[in-house]
Length: 346
Length: 80
Image (cartoon, rainbow over all chains, first blue to last red; front, side, top):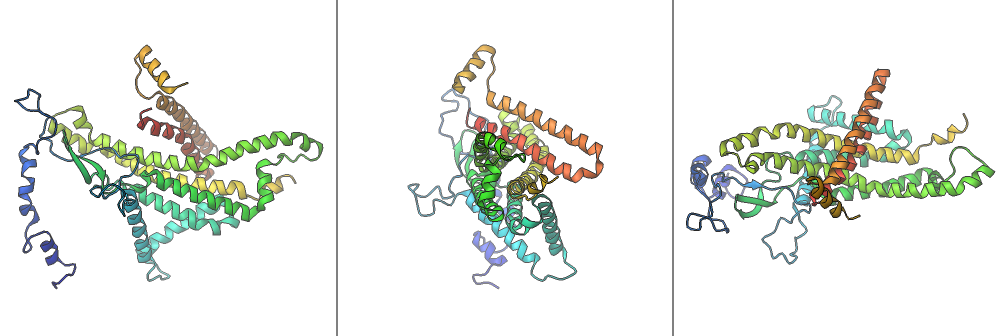
């Protein structure tokens, strides 16, 4: 069973151990400084008894996770920095690819042997798809739902998985960093929730707006589309319509501004919620240390205080995905609904 | 007017520091979300069968009202 395969013997060999041993015992020397509370190698700022500047409390020797930065850093910071070949691979892009692969793998697993009486995975997927289809159909209408459903359901599933991905331990707190006065400070995490990057949310909103324009024009035609925005509403005809036309054209211009603002608001809402949520969790976890409390109190605080905020983030993640999808479907419904032509006949 | 001037004036006059943009936006958002919630509760009370539809509209309304405060939150993170 040896060779180059993925098996237990090679796993231990890759770690540098000759055979299977207890990892806890072998890593004991690494954990020594943490257990003893001894300081890590000295920081750059001069401090100590000979300089008279009091040393920082170095007994909390755990890595300190800082808040997420607004722009996602590349995950190859050790490279030349002058634009290496894979500089574009930031941590958000890595997580985006991971989530897409995860969803695809789960979907393949669910639909591999489809049967009339479904197994658990297929059952779960069928329930999700059915609920989403009913929800979108109730908003958009039967004539549009077949075209619109794939994009909207994909947006919902991708956004909700990506939002919840940021709550896993290790996302946002494991990565590259540098030594600082408070211990090892992580400034470029390896994994970061994908929707906490404005690039991703802006891309999703832009793609949706392109599709919205295409679907609206395909459904109602260009003339009706412009009439819907700039036309005289209220069933007026003839002289009154000609008099009121300039006002309605002005109103149409304002409506164009509001339509142009939709991708901005869609992207900023999702980005702001998830980004602020991550920073909130980081602030809550570091609360005890920031207040300068004794070490054992800040340990207890960083475990118990974030718990209600974790539940809040779970709720916010699901809610923001739902709101994104519902708003997209409402925008489609607003410009493709056929009901208005019958209102004048009542 | 320059927002920095307003912020500095507020800080000098009353000792108020921090993001005044976020404070005002948060106040507006909280009032808006509360209004949507109260109207939704009232609607469900009058017609309990419409709970699903009212819930959908209520969630959309709350998210739109809250978005303005989120924009101000991003500005506050950038130091304004």
